[in-house]
Image 1 (spheres, rainbow, N blue to C red):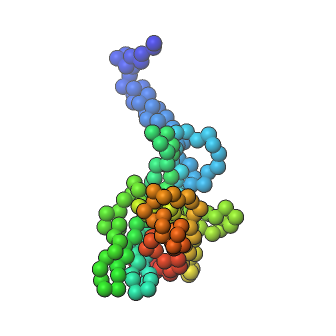
Image 2 (tube, rainbow, N blue to C red):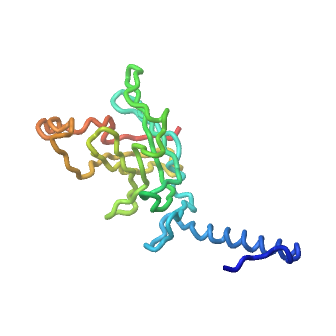
Image 3 (cartoon, rainbow, N blue to C red):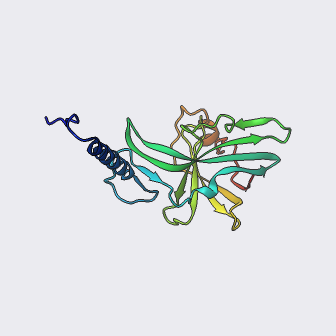
Amino acid sequence: MNVLNLKNIPMKNIFLILLFIFTSTHIYSQQQVYPLHAEGDDFPNNSYFKDMGGELDPYIGVWKGDWNGKTVYLELRKVKYFLGINGKGNYRDMILGERKIINSDGSISVDRISNFNELNPEFIGIGSQFKNPAQKYITFAPENMCRASAKLNITFLDAAKTQMSLHFIYNPGHIDESCQYYDLIMNQQQDFPMNLPKDIVLTKQ
């Protein structure tokens, strides 16, 4: 094994060697960053797919809407999120969200914004519909709903992107008798009590 001996190397050359090592390391780390929608399947482990163009930025913020006398708040954040298991995977800029719902009497029925969970949020996106890529959506997967989830189609309603509509569509899924809502869904033919409207207009605060 060859070992670099720095004792007999002039200080100027040592500086150049260290500069080369630092530059090489920096370049290598930069090679791990790719555009958000980069295509391919041979990216190195722990690559970072970055929102370089800021396409996710219009979603960021606190959004507010009214629903049958209730007030709905939705906070959306852009987060560098790890997708993988056991250290194998990649990082990607994603939109994560949590909600707060205040009843007409002022009581709070849901508040996940106060303790925003970036590791396991209720909302995660942004995705594009397969048959219509221009239609964006965010996935809604609330806790304790027997793994039931939904897509919320997002449509901005103004050029400034200060208002958006959400349209709720259930994802196909399976429910068995161990689910606490089995009778409600299978026998009473009702929906999961997800406490979110099928359609709502939200305004950025």
